[in-house]
Length: 570
Ligand code: ATP
Ligand code: MG
Image (cartoon, rainbow, N blue to C red):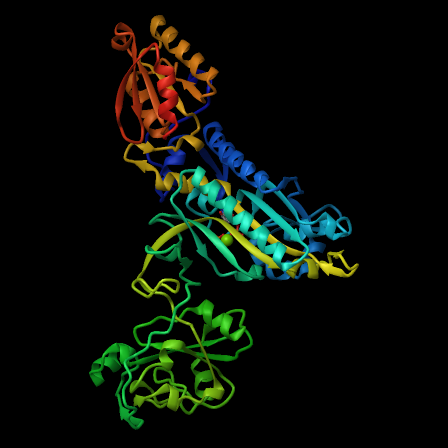
């Protein structure tokens, strides 16, 4: 490709609308342009990167037996009504009516579509396993579309769905996809972790999020440096922390005037915070009171509380609901509450001795609370409900966990028969028995992957592409393209590189050299080959490696093979 014919508008100014570095660079380097909030055009440079990422994805999906197909983006409401998600998907779903008033949505995902596609057609266990995928636009009317392609309303997703005859088969499909994702993100040159994730509303069994490590990421993850454990902060399992065993002293009520926070209680009674028990009061959609208790220095993890109580949503509790249950806001404990509230106590709380907790009366606390002795075991749910913190022990190896932020670029889920059951998709097994398919679903955000790669690979001058996903692998810059000898010299090298299969751009624009160099750095081609009067004279070329900034001078005779070799490590 010749730059003089290539549409690649770069911007010198930093666009005001962009916060994240990747978003700024994608606009400045001419990869994307906005059309409306969360809607973008991919310009030729950006689309070249997208196509390379999609090609890597295709190769790895196909290597595992995936078969590419293409389903409609527009989906009839009926299949979503069958699964029950038409009502619950809410405002995130883009809905529309056709001229006859029939309802449709623009697909935010395709579990319903693919299940309805194969039901009735795949009838026998002999046709399984089946892994079908597509790469197409998805639509989600995000509340806060932002950060360019990171969280947009129209975005390109690869989604694969697996169908198996039993759970063992489903788990094998899951392992295959996990492995494929590992290969995809490694080939894209990303630093990432497979993070144990909460299944969220999609339901089903286990799940991992493939998360690119970046301080700007929206996900918070806990990971271990000593082993490969990593989990989202919502999911990270925590082992019980046992306090030193003490002799249990008699329970006692003490006055704690105005001490309605843990900080105040701890200061007033002069006890370490690890000796206090903190309460958080919620109500679910039905108004049920849910009381969660953790150690004073710990935080409640609402997702774990949801899972422990089978609630759908949690809201902060009204004082009236707390009073009705015999409690008192700011002075709560499980001791002496009336029946009716769900009481969830963190594992670590149960191991405390002679602790401080509310007495369910204004300005009053208990001291010498010994949960094993004083909490009514029949009335409480004891489980892990706390939020992970830096330094917590790793659930796998016991070493200290670290916290970091990341960008979720892909997710793998086992679904079990959730959708096959809801849409009544069955097959006949070896014994002629009718069974529901055991399914899995596996998504990758292609644009988000491109954005994450930039987020992780940039400097003050611009983007630094890994060769595998660079819009061009090599750019050749004759410093003055108006000089026929320079252009001629450059064109020959261009042809030789092309013949070797290198993806190369010839910057034959008649711009000043400084402008062209700035564009090269901004767009971030891995290798720049410079042709100048000096290199012509010495019959050589100058090579600049974008990532390291290294400069090499290669003889003209073997420069092409040397560039080819250099590329292998970029
Ligand atoms: P998030 O939690 O970030 O909203 P999600 O968990 O809802 O994402 P999935 O349903 O797992 O997303 O979709 C698969 C992949 O699609 C994600 O891993 C992500 O890479 C991409 N993706 C999801 N939503 C968006 C979006 N609004 N813009 C760009 N990419 C997205
Ligand atoms: Mg996800």
